[in-house]
Length: 492
Image 1 (cartoon, rainbow, N blue to C red):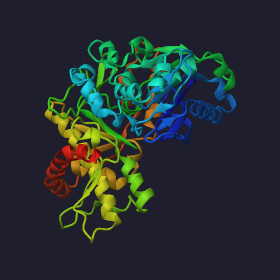
Image 2: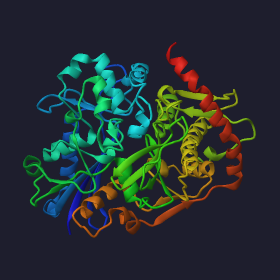
Image 3: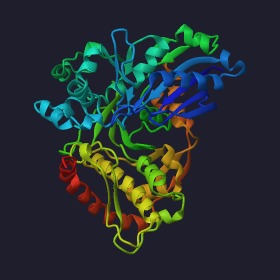
Image 4: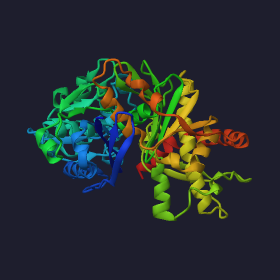
């Protein structure tokens, strides 16, 4: 039976799994990825570090006869990455992460420079600072000499694929979150690049990540002692891999991934745009036939980890996280970094509202968990308001292992939440894409349906639903009221 090596490159952790054709994980390895920060606001991955870590984890997996069974390598990577390359396509910088906030410094100037463009309806990306276009604008104004040295521009996916195959290529789902890909014309948008003096020719080719294959480079094949002809599938971004692995690419099924960041998306055959001014929905193309419409949060487990690591330790698995109390609730806007809607997002920061002397660390932790769930409901409401109806919710990611948090999500969303069986569904989704890539009779979007049964369904508590339905409008009002104040605060 053939095997696939599935690489899951996240902003915090790198995972490499060995998966067979039945979707069974033979073995898996994981390691935290170092983040380099040489300048204020900088957060990057060092590409050479990533190469070494990937090779090391692969070698740990490839023991005995496994080396003779590997047929495919495939990757799923994070969005928002940008790496500047020289004329030989050698790195001039690291790969930017979502937590890199340098482009916030020039965001007002970016908005002014692009005021005559309808970026959202051209690209599906709202006006927020972490996107690649806003990052490029930062380099064009703050690090001009470095930008002049750059001949090409890479992302997390094209970096890996070029290393593995020699091809300078990225996948559609990664390009779609760049703010440079024209969702209607289906190529890099030359008009958006022109104001900063760049051209689409300097960016990777864009291919369908579910079908595009290339041969593994001989030096890597030799380093891993692989014996067969190994093909590399381009793959999709990490959230799409999870959606595939959990069987969520069906009508009416919403997929939530709750990790350091979080997302809520639903598959559709056409891109969906938010008709409200806040632009809460991003229509990311998975391929030319399917879009993952929805929204995402920059702050999910991130503020939870901050609270536990920087303030005080607290057991988030404690049932006390579900207590509703009888007094006015402590409300948290958990936005330690910017968020992704156009109004609140670019300037958002964290807030505890209603803090009293009787509140303790459990109350603060609970308010963070609830604040993330309320923020997810903000996206859920946007989908409903734009005629994208979710009948079923599936949840994956590290947050799904925090039992009280899953219950909080169910109570605030008012829907049962299904936790698919098995772990590492993104790894499985990527691997099964690879096995299906050369089979014309296999529907890759039904892979997860065949692999997964729901091992757990968490139902909302009716009393808690009623309480949160009363509290959520206040959370929403607080969030939107603070929007202008966030921007004013950045000027102090």
